Every structure is written in structure tokens, then in C-alpha cells.
Amino acid sequence: MTGPRPPRPRARAARALTRPPRLREGDRVRLVAPCSPVPAAQLDTAVEVLRGWGLEVELAPHVRDRHPLLPYLAGTDRDRAADLQEAWCDPDVRAVFCARGGDGAHRMLDLLDFDEMRLAEPKALIGFSDITALHEAFAVELGMATVHGPVVGTRYFVGDEAAQRELHTTLFAPEQRLVLNSPGAHALVPGRAEGVTFGGNLSLLNNGLATPHSRLSAAGGILILEDVNEDAARIDRMLTHLLRTGWMDGVAGVALGTWTDCPPDLGVIAELMRDRLGPLGVPVLWGLEFGHCAAQLTVPLGVPAALDSENGSLVLSVPGLE
Figure 1 (spheres, rainbow, N blue to C red):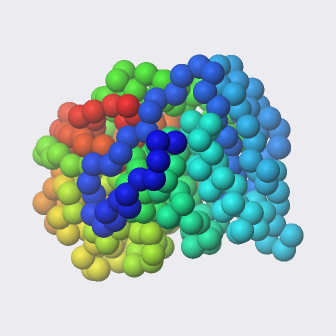
Figure 2 (cartoon, one colour):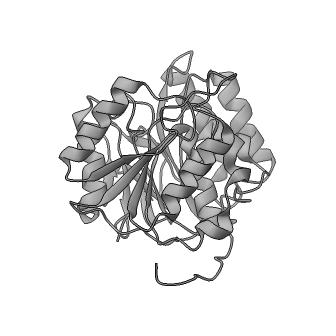
């Protein structure tokens, strides 16, 4: 710690944020469970993989907990929040890995002491899906760039060597992962735009609208979106809600990830995206492979980037980590 930091301006629209330092062998990291319970065997395997990267791995005190009454939560809201805050504020911890998404991140946001967390040195927060709520809160309240990547205590990391390589490179050698693309990625709306990366899971962004710790506007941003187990009608309602509130006004471009198990089929989902997002008049890229999929791309959030939908790429202007 180098002394108290002044409060950061609240990130109510997309802007470039403070990037955390990259990881190095010997760094201490901590695994937390801010959402749903973590499968024990996958958690143990994740620890071994991270140790194989040369990291000193710690488990938060409540990472294996289950809520006594609500089985979809990994322990009580207060314990989950305490684990996250203690990990973030520990000066010896260099990164915080979320072990699972699922449910529950929004429930414990109001229990975090962001005034205290602003005093901590920058470090990486890694996760996706329900962790979108934390990505938004850390941007708004801490001015901190974060990492949209695998939750390590799940099949999206354990046993997925491609996803592991993606995450490792982003965390240890981020200058090697400036160009993000996928086979088959193509334009729903052609064009090129520049902005700051943000977003994540559509459901979480929609649920967080107009709540504390969520940004008021997508203005200036390259919005990344993905989801799982949502049918076309529900996706339509969520997108329409974001559009009608004015939240999408001024967005620079949209990069769409995977829509796993979203019926009736991906063709309908793509047409829905063209219908809802096309009138914005900004580039929309379809098929960037981040989200609930094998070999998912790791996407740094809070960094300036250029979206070129015709070339099927999202190119970071700076590495996601320092």
C-alpha cells in the first residue's frame, strides 16, 4: 500500500479505467465464491492448475460454503461479501479469481465497503456470467478495469486447455492478446468504431439497470453481450428494456458472444439482434466466442478498443493489464 487514494469519479458511462498489474510467477492469488456453490472436485483441480502456473493459491474462508436455506447460494450474503472484500483489500493478494457464477452477486453488493476497497492497490478480478454485476460495480465504484474470463471452479476452466491458455496469456503476457477474433465471426451491422470495452451477461446488465453500483449509460462503450438458457422472447424483452430506457444511447458498437441453449436456434437470435440493435446505427459483430462456451475468449473490460465488425475483430488499444 502506498497510502490513501482519493475517491475515484463514478464511471456512469464507459471510460478508460485503471488497469491492474499483470501476474508473475510467485504471485499470491485468492479464490472466492461470490455467487453459487462451487463443485468441490472442480475447485480442487482449479487450484492445481493455478499452482501449475507458478501462483501461490489461497482459498477464501467461505469458498466451499452453502447457504443454509437457499441452495443456489454459496454461503450467506455477508460471508460472500466479506470474502471478496478481504481478498481485494489484502495487500499481498495480486488477483482475485471467482470460482463460479450462477446467482447471488447482486445480493451482496450493498454489503461491500467500497470506501475501504478504494484504498487497495489495483489487482485483477476474473470471472463472467453472474460476475458481470461485480465487473460493473468495480468499474463504477473503484474505476478498475477487470477481466471477463472463465470462472475457474467450473467446466469453463477445468479441463478446457484452450480457455486456460487464453486466460494465462491475458494475465501473464497481455500484450500478446490485443486482437480478439473467432472463426466465423461476422458483421450483423457493418462498420468500425472505437470505445471502451464493458458489459458481459445480458440478464445481469438488465437486472442491474437503475440500481446502485451500475452505470447509467452505455455511451462511449464497446458493449459485449452474451447469455445462456434464455429464449428469444426473453432476450427480446431485455434488449428492448435497455433500449427504451435510453441506456443504449451513445453506445459506440456491440460485440456479441455466445448464446448457448437459447431457443429456438441461433439463426433466430441473430435476426433478433439485427432487428433490435440495427437501428442504433453502430457496428454489431456476431460470433465472437466469449461467454458460456468451450475455449472461451478472455476479454479485458475497461480498456479502449476498436471494433471492426466487417473483419470480425475486437482490437485492444492497450493490453488489458499493465
